[in-house]
Image (tube, one colour):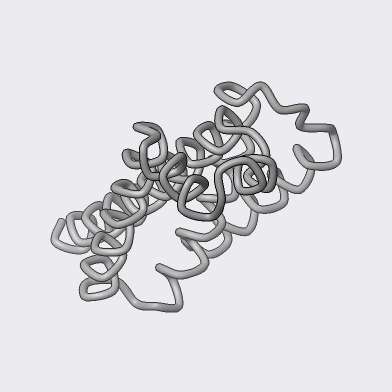
Length: 130
């Protein structure tokens, strides 16, 4: 019972890290898409204008907060989970989640080749967990 509780805690932390990374990356991508080409903004209003445009975007700020929380969640996870499990598991789950989130929320065209890669990553995570 103790081993299963420890395993549940470890995988909960890993999933939390991956979820924060996925949320942060999707929010930042959505923010940057809504802003448009930063080179054009910089050409029109200079570098300070481009920085102001990015930092005034609520989506960007929430995404950056998610990424900061992701960093601290990863630190906590590494304090209780072996690096050899935590790093590949969070990276691969983030990869899987990003593909799904890109399709669902950002309406990106995720082709068959990318879905096949996601399936291979899923198999890798299952092998890692054993």
